[in-house]
Image (cartoon, rainbow over all chains, first blue to last red; front, side, top):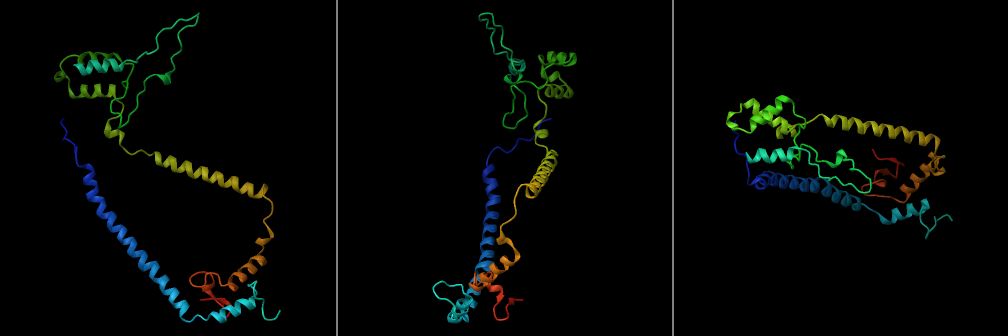
Length: 76
Length: 169
């Protein structure tokens, strides 16, 4: 009826040796995933938007819709 | 030997209040919650009292036998002595219980009941919503948002095709 002596030392070190590499890998994965899943498409979306953006045309159509207070539509 | 002696002292319920007779008042009633209690916790391996307080005749004789050499005790007797002092072993303490089912069930039940209360409130307590929630008003709001090009790169106005006056496919 004698049990094996349980582990008394190095418990934290053992846990860290196991979990820290996993944590590192997951964090790296999250960062890489965010970069290529979110930031790169976002940069591309902005680039595409401003490639053929005509500010004057946009301003005119917004003015005609009546959303500005400084300039009213050309009719009034 | 010393350990059994010490355990015996710890085993009996310690009456810590002394008899104090003052001006006709008697002894204060000892409340159960003020006395040392037994509980199975990992962080408190030796509880203040034994689990079994009232020993049967068999257990009394076993305790007497404990005074002698422990090598004379059989394995069943050792286990019986253990069970007198403790309710659950450390292994039993750590076992998973089915308590989580009760907890989840209780939580869901209470959330459901809360939902009923909220429904009743919506019907009988609150007045009508403001006129700004009418569909026509909401349509005008949306038109204004598109006119002022809200979030034109990735958001709302980005999905609107202003030439054809419809949502982009």
